[in-house]
Image 1 (cartoon, protein in one colour):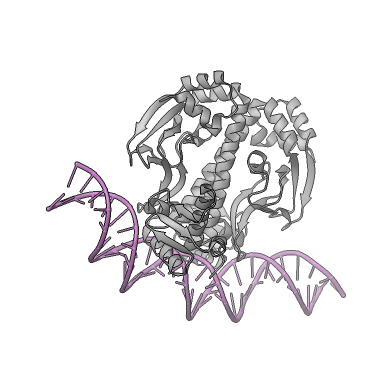
Image 2: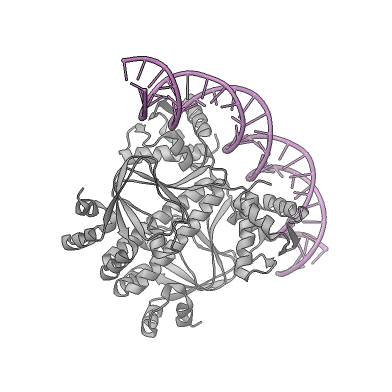
Length: 226
Length: 226
DNA sequence: CGGTGACTTGACAGGATTCAACAGAAGTGG
DNA sequence: CCACTTCTGTTGAATCCTGTCAAGTCACCG
């Protein structure tokens, strides 16, 4: 696979010259993972971060009883595991492959070198971390202040936005991963989906969901009681 | 108040020359707030971020029903409201003064200028945002995967660490703010505190708390059922 | 002294997890 | 190609944590 092409496509390295990109590509190596495989575990020493070449990755925490909370779903051309590059030296969460996937590995020290030489790369990284903070702030808000139906409605509306705004959306992840992303369990998500369907808000056929009552869903997602 | 002195003391501007510090100080202005006063509200356009000179600030989200979730307690010499400098242009949360306090205001554009000229400032900011991400990751974990007693135990142990490790800790915030920080309500926190006391884990006298059974508290904070 | 805010306690209700059982789908291997 | 296991998803019943409502105490301040 062409490392330079992927680097070029990622937001993190946007605006850099071709020359820079090849220099960046030269410090990376490749690692592939099979579906379900652990990429790194919480508490492990971190000497590098990753960029997804193809496939998707989940970043998650695990409770003592084994329940998972997904923090991020990482898509193609997005980086993950970058926090310990700047703070702490261990991964603060786990990462595992949602599908067979390939990653580019950026060694910490070499990347820090690059950062110092390339101010616009630092700015890109600041933008990336800020976006992550925005995401987390929303996640905290939903976990603490909203109930499961509101979180689910938010996610469906988010999918709708991402798809460009039709009335049909398709779940991009299995429902057990979805439930872990919403901070719940598969049973509850299944029930809520059912309830929304009987209330006429949505139609459900497997992973394909039709949003019938957009306004109703927006009310749900804002946390209004029904 | 001497802006340069506060800037010097903050982690964000660590390692910069005196010359740089005076230049930085020159772009700031002062704003004071009374206890309880709103500093900024979620959704407001953000043209600047803040640094606490004295007093403390809470950064928080509010639900439609009015319940609060505290995201951060900002101490002296710490910055807040810095996310929209790099991503989005509106504050993602609210900020209010916990006590009468004074802040230094950093206009966005002038600060971005400085960042480009001073690579080590960018590195400091990357470290800061990463620490915030670590904090958020823990917060999400606790909200989603642990119950209130575990969160409270974690916080008490955190206070103990901060105080240097005795058996006596003093709550640094009122209990209603504490409950909003733990993602709960005053009633529940009061009850849990009571339960821990009757179980002999802690002693409670107003805001002064004695940790009697350190191991027991650590078990609690890890989420182990009792 | 009236009043506001911090804190506590009791009763109650309700959302959500847990446990258990099951149906399909998917992937494996002989 | 089919039997078998594994994973995904669903449904029902019971339990429990936790938030809500209501009332009341205590301390502090104008």
